[in-house]
Image (cartoon, rainbow, N blue to C red):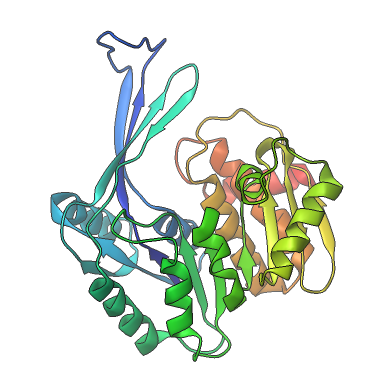
Length: 303
């Protein structure tokens, strides 16, 4: 079974504004509302690939009610925990450039996190996958994921995938997640780099993340592809397919879904990285999360 955890789900409000100008009233050319949150995106992408998932996390208020309703409409199984406050609304502005304005999120307490731990302990078994993705609400701190994994460490054989940034990620590495996926800019931030290194420098930084505890590390690089170092001492690189960027939201989540799906099927790191990169690219080339057919088409262009 694959479980995804989203501490900070959202409603994502996408607006197209032609030639946006600051300081005046702008009119939208188009707009749409979608359920968001990185773990939910991973679950949706995995469902499209035929995998069974259970989405967990925290929701609150009228926005949380809409998130539950929308997730049900999309056919996802979920076990969200109701908390105080309001689930956040994120505004995604598409004009000559992309601009995101992300909300703070619900009021998740330590007691709420304990409820999540109990739910996971009731369900997790050896061989399961636990995918923890995204930010945490402002009521929680950078030790949140580390503390969660500490409380779950007694459950042996769970494949933990962690997609976060900064200390939220690095503090949790000592619990040896199976996979982490920082993007190139998040990796540079972790190591205080002012410029993106070459591929050997990327491999070197990824190995340092292994030294800190990660078993396998993917560094996503957008249109430049993806690099990976594995616990079997492989250094892998895959070029991304060329295409027109339509929407970058969800591309990293699709990468994780693609990797987990293909790795479960083949047990091959390179095959999984290749499919993951195709999934991320396919998502970036469409308004919504990509279909399986779109992913397989993009993968065919990469062979």
